[in-house]
Image (cartoon, rainbow, N blue to C red; front, side, top):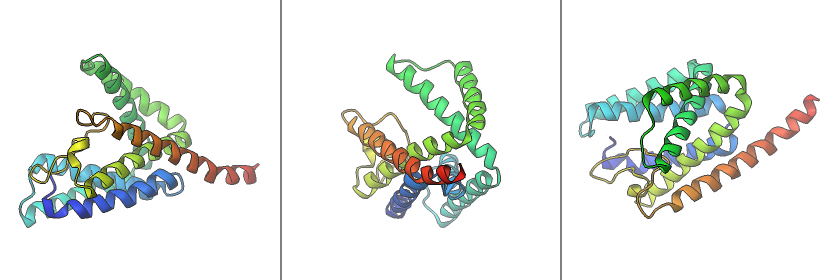
Length: 203
């Protein structure tokens, strides 16, 4: 978990990366992959070491972020597959949440594998959709972090650090999902418009 002193820099990183990913994700996909890898690496390292109170802990978080970024940048196709798998897992959990239950583990595994395979077969569309929705969520996290409303999305407060729980905002804060979806749709439209001239010239 990030210490309180790093909340603002992390929020700014999420905002900048969110704009880049949401509206220019297809053209800057390798950079976006690196950003996503860094965020995931920091979150994984933070879950392992707990609250980062010392310089050593912060260095471990940064090291985890760099490792995650390198892993996704160097493994381009794995990154695409992971995006598809992540969206499939999120969809399964979101549907199960509507019924007030947790999906069976085997169903989640099967859907993530199917999502990864589908993503590899339609890479361009997965990149556009994945970066638009992922970037929109980074924008939401960054804005709420600067607004000191981390608890709205379950990111935690100054005492507990940052934790990301998409699709499950705090009770009474469902407007966050509406903002996320609107930003994602705007990102989709922007990326499609940017790619259309290139497709026309190719013809």
